Image (cartoon, rainbow, N blue to C red; front, side, top):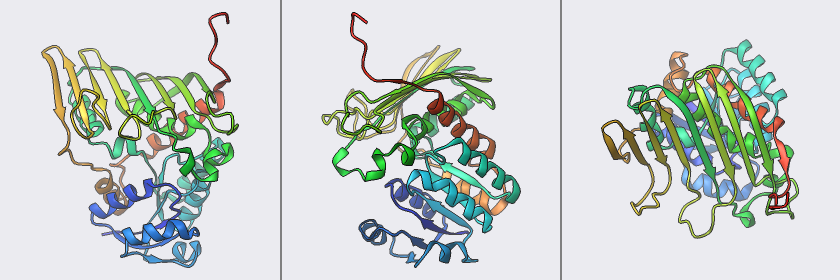
Length: 340
C-alpha cells in the first residue's frame, strides 16, 4: 500500500481528499502547514499523521509516495513541480493551475519525471450521482452525447473567506477556479480529447468592495465529442440549505440525464439525485450507495503506474480549457438595462 503526506491545507477540500485515500487503504504519514488556526482542526481530524517541521522534511522523506495539497491555488502547481522532481506523485485540489505558464511547466516536468499529476475534481469524483451518470452514459443509456450543461453556483460566505480568496493572482479567476469542474465534466461526458473555447465572460455584479473578485462567469466549449456550456457564480442565497444547487445536464440523441448534486428542490432529502428521461419514460435514480472510485483508482495508479483514475492528457486538457476560458473572457461590469 502507499504512503502519502499533505502540504497545504488552505481549502476545506483537503478533508475529502485525505478521506478518499484513507478509504482506499493508503497510509497518512505526515503533513505540513504554517497556519496554526488550520492545523488544530486538521490534526484533530487526522491524529494518525505527524506534523512535519517543514515542506522539505516531507519532500525528502523516502517513505512518501504521494503528496496531496489544497494549498492557496497559485501555490499548487509550483509545489507539484517540486514534488515530482523529488520522485513523488502529486494530487491537488482544483484548480491545479492559475496560469497557462504554470500548466506548461508542469507538463514539461511531468513528461520528464513520468510522475502522476492528478487534479481532484470533487464535483465529479466525490459526487455519487455524477459517478452514476458517467456509468449510464458509458453504457449507452441516452445514446451519443451531444451537449453538457454544468451549473456551479456557490455560497460566498464572504466573512469567513481568507484574504487570498479576493486576490485575482492567487485564486486565478472564477472560470479558472470553479469552472475547472465544469471543464472536466464536459470532456468526460462528451468523451472529447480535443476542445476549444468558443466564448466566455466574467463579471463582478454585486461585490464592488472586492474589486478583484469575480462573482459570475460562463463559457461555451466545442470538443471533438460534443459541445458544452457552463455557468459558475457566488450567488447561492442564504435560503438554500446547502452550499449550492450544483447541477449537470447531459443531452444525448436518445434522452437526457440531470444530476442534482446537493439538493432536490422537490423535497427529497440529501444530495446525489439523478433523473433519466429516455424513450421508455422518466425515472429517478437514488445514488446514495454508489461507490466513489477515485481514491481507490489513484492508489492503484501510484502502485501500477497506470491511468485508471484519470488520464494525464485529460487532467491537463481540462485545466487548459478553464485557463483559456479565463484568459479569453470578456469582462462584464453591469447587467445591461432595457435601453442598452
